[in-house]
Image (tube, rainbow, N blue to C red):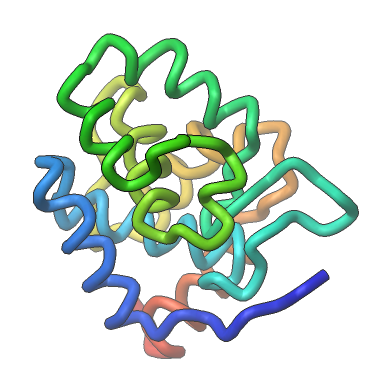
Amino acid sequence: MQTFTPFQSANLRALIQSTLTPMGLYSANAEELLLATCAQESLFGTYRTQGGSGPARGIFQMEGEDHDDIWKNFVVYHPTLASELTSLSPTHQTDDMVMNDPYAIAMARVHYERKPGNLPDPTDLIALWNYYKHWYNTPEGAATQDEFVRHYQHYVTDGKAS
């Protein structure tokens, strides 16, 4: 499996902001949740395809079924969002997320956008973990809280306690 140089935290923050702000989907809560998700799922962009020929793609390791479900059951009912996503990826295929980071960012944000309730407080790492685990990794997923915290501290805060 090919690996890539992971993002620097400031660079990914800037890319999240520049991608989501024009779409009206930016918030500090969303930014921190996406940073934490990326740290956990792909080690900040080190992996862009899932090992063992798995279905996950991009810096958020979104699976094709999730990608397609977002388009089929959410995006089609939001024409402005559909247009914005299409401008990022005209074909809007799952594999587009492998090297098209703005599209992967937007799709991960939309994944969280369609979930009920508010996004967690960006300063509460355990709340970020709980939200991620419930809505992204799911209770059946392999991620653990210890691993999530460790990845967040390593990649997002560059080893500084949060």
